[in-house]
Image (cartoon, rainbow, N blue to C red):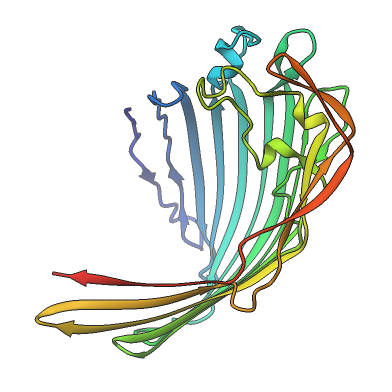
Length: 315
């Protein structure tokens, strides 16, 4: 795998009252991976402005190409004429230091995808899918050197996907409309600290099961699909989700060796976050055999409260 980077250029424009900096960065990596033998190409660029009030305003763009999966190309029901799928990213970010210890960021972004590989009744697979993701995020961070750091963020995201031109757009599994995160870490002494993280996700509406579960033959690694057209009969959704994680760590010396110990508690208040699976009444093709399923809806629990600890040694 090799990567080529073009050098960055900074061009000051002294004629403008505020400082102006233009940054151009182009990246064209082409890689061949032994596990899936898929090529990936990308090009990205950004422009950055320093405003009179000291804020940094940045615009970025990225263009990415992803080759089809081996099963979509090489399987018996594949399509060797498939082309790469395309995605384009657009980002605007504003950074401003409220003080030497407090930083505020605001970002908005949009991504659209074209020529996504999706199932087709005639050609098995075609470059006919489209998708888009858009959203915004506000991020506030405060730190006191060697004592405290913490941040809070809110993000709004909306993502939809269309399998082919004849279908309507459907939400992605990870279309979590509202996401709130709060993180804090306090050092009581240079060797003793406590950290916590709380996160809330508003959940998703119904989405295809392939968004969360990879269904394939473990022997041929996807060249022989186990379930054909499973997304039409099987779907899933996430209920509103929140949890609190806590970490306590302490460092000391033992026989001249620096030892660190930590205790982690995940999902402190044991919130019962669940994933809902929805099965429609249908007949599925499982490796050439028809298997009938009845309509069923059931909730699968995610991780409960988990407590674990560990030690680190520094020589």
